[in-house]
Image 1 (cartoon, rainbow, N blue to C red):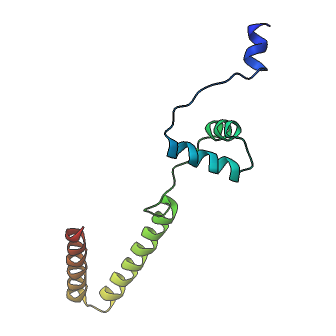
Image 2 (image 1 turned 30 degrees about the vertical axis):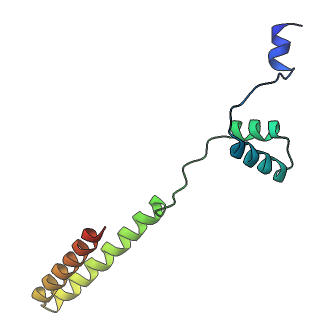
Image 3 (image 1 turned 90 degrees about the horizontal axis):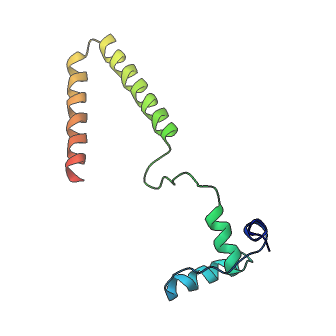
Length: 108
């Protein structure tokens, strides 16, 4: 038998090191997928890499959209206050907002 046939066609036993709890979990997942452990391990290992799951934050596009919306609203409010000649009131609101954000940051 040539090496090229062996490399491409014939499967050979391999070994994997796992503790009992890991092996039982792999076996359960393989059964649930309707596969042998070998099939399951090989298919999962050869799957294309997935982008990381964002668990603690929104997708970047959503964050950017929210930032643009928030800044648009803030600019509109500032214009409304300036039109009403209420500059001092606007400055007080901004100072209160900054203090509130700083307090939230201090609690983290």
